[in-house]
Length: 442
Image (cartoon, rainbow, N blue to C red; front, top):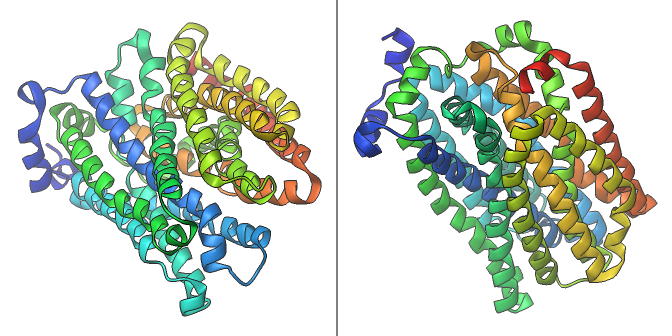
């Protein structure tokens, strides 16, 4: 065993080997479950914060401005997690190399759960003044750094263990965490909004979903450590398939793939927030809708998203991943031109917007991770996929809620469609340029 691998073998990981199923063998199906649990926990933390950015933080942290401006300020803090995420990747890759992936995951998931739970204790502006904004930003940075650290290579392991004829199916498994995380987060907030008075919800009810995040992350930690400690993972680690490589070397050898890989799924990452975070803000601010009603619509959309992500697997197996990504980008472009104005057409318009939006999002987002992973050489897959994912989220998703609300509040909902359309164009251009990638993903 190499020195780097020996250093990566920790007591925590060795203990986790004792709970492996079937005499220490873990099947692709069991890996899939671990990946889904892990990704759902990440996205739950993400969506709890996102929902609170609309329903809580504007009045709690920015009570000195009107509701629209407060929400814009709240959305201005939103991207700091995505800005911090690449730094988290660098920090935790160093921890990975020195102390092992089990130690890295433990620290990262406790940081993620702890940063999210800390938001439950966030004092408002009326209590501590501008320091409330500082704390909000610091906790958000903690989430971002932790998200960089929870990258564990499990999607790569899942893809490498999948039967060749089912690569598209297994590639979509990690992406199920997004709609599932939204379902749980929206359901919790809707429950407290329905069962509590407005005063109780504003005072303490909104804080409970943030407490739940810590418990969910503890479960996710166990599920992921169990898989990281398997002989399959160890074998791939020793063969360097899942070892972190120096970032500079990765960018030098595969920088083109990183850049095009970040832009290729751009429309799905932009769409991600245009059908999740932004519509809730529009419904509350401009439609003056009870938030619990829209959260129920959002849960319906998330359920459609689960089905669409699952369907992306067999569709990608049949027509090719690149073809599916390109076709989805075209359909999202059509959606961008026609659908955003539905948000201003009452509840029926909202339902159509959310269900169709989540359907298209699921088809595109369902294969974005798999396409990124398969674009890299085995040696640099772990680091390259991590860097590309960080950049894709930063470029495509980080500023989407702020941009969509700012554009729509000044120029109307049509401007949101133009913003989304620009993402579709970027995706199609990136797919067209990267012919080498196309040959790998078809």
